[in-house]
Image 1 (cartoon, rainbow, N blue to C red):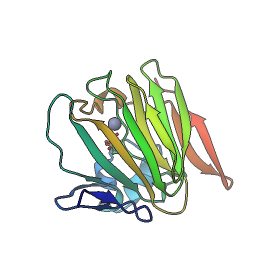
Image 2: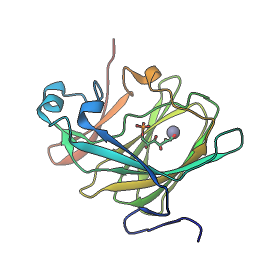
Image 3: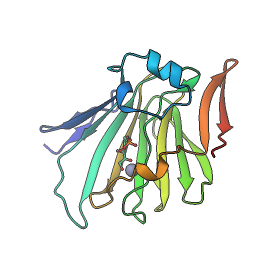
Image 4: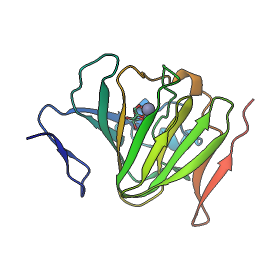
Length: 181
Ligand code: F6R
Ligand code: ZN
């Protein structure tokens, strides 16, 4: 049997699944409201990534599903850390499995935009584009991703954060620009 994915839960049906958990305490400096972030127990799971085993090397592909919990740090929705690929020219495809949220995309020049993620949505992330998932819904947001094994991750270039943040403000989902410097 080849590996599968259960659409309802977004979980892989395969052996040898590799799972990585990212907890609140791992996301230092990621959320806007530092006091609210400190108030969360450090062991609070924000997201998990399940991956199928893949061989490494030029031309090979990783397949992984991110399960991003619903919740907020202060007024800001839970989100992934977000990254450029170390090999900047390498793109990626995201596919929405369950839940609802946003894919935040940002160019090297700092231009940011969103795509709506929902069950069945397909997102082609071009090369040279940073990406982050944001869960604006009330259930787990799960999205399957396919990317080259050679792509790597560059988190350091986004240490200052993305140009847009997403909050629940007076009962509405609101994106706000961020001033740095
Ligand atoms: C891989 C990819 C996803 C993310 C995952 C967690 O290139 O984009 O599998 O790695 O959504 O997000 P980060 O890596 O930003 O913590
Ligand atoms: Zn990526």
